[in-house]
Image (cartoon, rainbow, N blue to C red; front, top):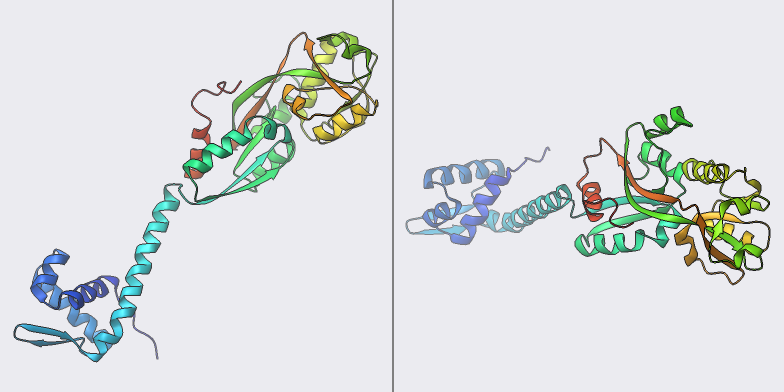
Length: 313
């Protein structure tokens, strides 16, 4: 036998009348006239198939059927209230899950402060944090695997080289710079160039290099190679490593030198020296998201960076 659906408005009227046990008082509490309240109760009784109240002059009481229905009606109304509250919280971005990709170097700069500030303001949002290099983040954003990315040197919108690749990578995505920082030379402590306080890039021409693979972060890789070429040489790469921790460890062994964002100095290895380079150049960290993403969670995270994209630089 098919179970009848009970409209929530009728259950609400029933629950209020069950508490007031007076049609006039219940109607006033509901903000309706007494005849419509009586009609709601009659319709509900028709669906149940039994009277829910006894009606005598000056007295209203629940029947056995009414007493049985009341707890279920209250649960249904409470579930609705909870559901509405949850929907409002999700719609306003106060609950839900936010998937964030981040480059390892972002964990040394903007990421910790950003997550602290976001969690303080939205403690009920679940954060899914995934470490990725730049190129995989671009793909993950496009494929909706992550919602926001913190990446190093995103595709440029006006690059002379690799313009077609950059345009394709940027399609449908938006980026905002949240940090700029200088480059440093990463040298074995015993390297002759570790003695001066700064290093001219041209003096690295004869040193072998340890670099990130271009596939991991085309923008940063091309920027480093471009800086070397502007200084008069093409870096002789003898080893590639995806993680900066690994790059520094390979430099420590004496395998080669590298150029890296200044925040990499926080990776402390005894046998590695970090020196500012001349001429000075800067690299940027950007937040990326899908242009058509209307999620309030994404909007809240972007707000957490502030209005000035260079404020962290």
